[in-house]
Length: 367
Ligand code: 2NL
Image (tube, rainbow, N blue to C red; front, side):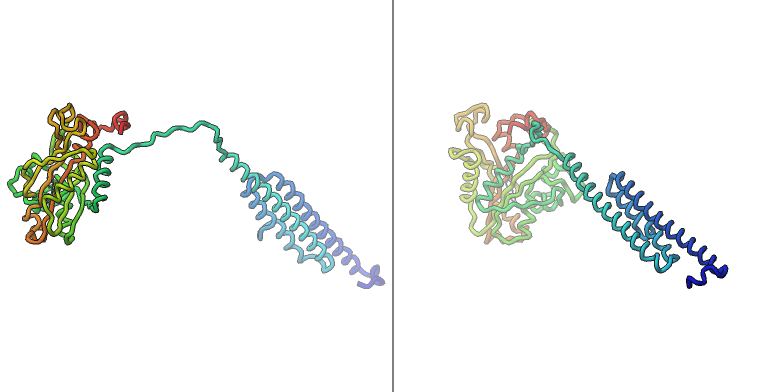
């Protein structure tokens, strides 16, 4: 538009009008941008959490945010005005971004301080003493016995508590009409499955699966259909031992039991074997140790006997070896079976088996 033509026609007024609109437009945008800056500044001061801060950022600076919306309207501006508004828009963006960054630093620091405050531990407050449990006397005994035999090169073997009649009885040379098989004595799951009455079935399984030499102890729960009294429980523990190799003799058994007895009850302990019968050993013996209280003179603990029975033992019956696929002409073995309860009662002077199962803290604390 040439200045000389300014007053000549209505075109001039149209131009003036357009300029007025443009000026208003520019003015409005300036105002909007300044509003955005002022409002965001004010609201930023009220922000309390990182989440609120992020919402604010999206609201003002996001793709669909207020600042973006204003700047989008720049298309209507003249080429002269556009960079000015663009620059102002940029300044507002940088201003908000800076404020957000500052606020973020402050909020993060506040958060951290609050966390530290909450997690503060007063190490001068007296501690609460918690009751630390102790090992059960039967566990102590089983672990002691295991340690003694591990020291002699034995391995620990375990097996199922619910066992086939075959492994629990048949393979151990306990015939069908043997009293041990009576329902009075054994818990039956069905005709062929019982709760094991001894841990010997673990030894049968081992002999069937492994070639000699075999040197194992088998700790575990066993079950018999007994009523509870001072010396009986339907669930108790056994730690059976088994050695099978070439040339194993009764002398080896006695030597082993002597080492066991001395380790368990003291160096001065003597052992004594009395002839006995088990279907699965031949010969068989019941084994006593000299009383660890009186040394053999007779006292309350040994009931004046001087001796206390601790286990049954014997040379593995050839029939049992053969049943497990071991040639009894080449191999021989011995086995023994201390009871966990009886050993614990003897060792700790407990006179009633029921104490071992009642879980009275005052009792258990003593071991
Ligand atoms: C007892 C008797 C004993 C055995 C357990 C045994 C195992 C096999 C073969 C031969 Cl596979 N014997 N075990 C032998 C003798 C006695 O325990 O009165 N225990 C409390």
